[in-house]
Amino acid sequence: MINKIILDTDPGIDDAMAILFAEAHPAIDLKAITTVYGNATIENGTNNALFLKQKYNFKADVAQGASQPLVREPVGATVVVHGETGFGDVHAPKVTDLQADSRSAYQYIIDAVKAEPGEITLVAVGPLTNLALALEAAPEIADLVKEVVIMGGAFGMNGHRGNVTPFAEANIHDDPHAADIVFTGSWPVVVIGLDVTEESFFTKDYLDQLRDDAGEVGQFIWDISRYYLKFYSEKVGLEGCHVHDPSAIAYVIDPTLFTLREGPIRVVTDGPAEGLTIQKFDGRKHLHDDWESKRAQQVGVAVRDQELLKLYRDTIVDYGTI
Ligand code: RIB
Ligand code: CA
Image (cartoon, rainbow, N blue to C red):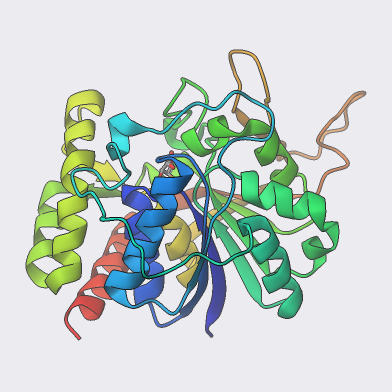
């Protein structure tokens, strides 16, 4: 089965790894890349998406999205993790001979979902601002998407609670109000958060092997990941990196790699726990319950990491050696 996806992303080093994974795998039809601020400014992130489209000859459209969150003060580009322009030490030249779609990302999403009811999976691997704007402008799309797959959040499984604050994951912390709108929407959401993305690990050797075996694309992934690995080594104390955004693509390709837990999800939108994601997964009745009326969503709580790593490697090697 071919999955038609729109990938909403803040490119971003691991975003680029995910974009290439989606483009490379035969079970995915990458229809569009919609951009959002986050790891980079919206201008740099969109240029990075256009750069990849041009470099690898993607059919996918690129549509530029939100430049800031719905309510909170912007956190700013994550230069310490992704570099000045988003791809670490690789600075994509300004793409002038390709244009982004004239519509904003949220309008592009609405139009695409309505054009193919029941066919499109929205995969979001950045702040959820574009998805929230789309849902607010056209609530009827909730019944028309196939599924919404999100890399974001942390629910405390396997000891994973937060990466930008002790209790918040970056994509949700960037726009907690948007995340709460998206998680409580009446569409089917699967959350691939730190609980599982921090269970999979690209070691330095894994990335070296990819460079050696996957041709130019392997070299590109290796080049952009040098800055990322330096951050992990110096700031996190790990020699390699977690597999964040590619894990959301892995879910679309093979959902059986993940164990899911069902229940409605809310997001803390201010205070010291801003960006905290909380799933109610028991059936207990309470006097007051802001989860009760919300749709039950799915949260990834376990992953077969070695199989995921093999899937990524095999896909990129095949793509890079055609
Ligand atoms: O917390 C990890 C997430 O934040 C990833 O999507 C990464 O690209 C950054 O956006
Ligand atoms: Ca991202």
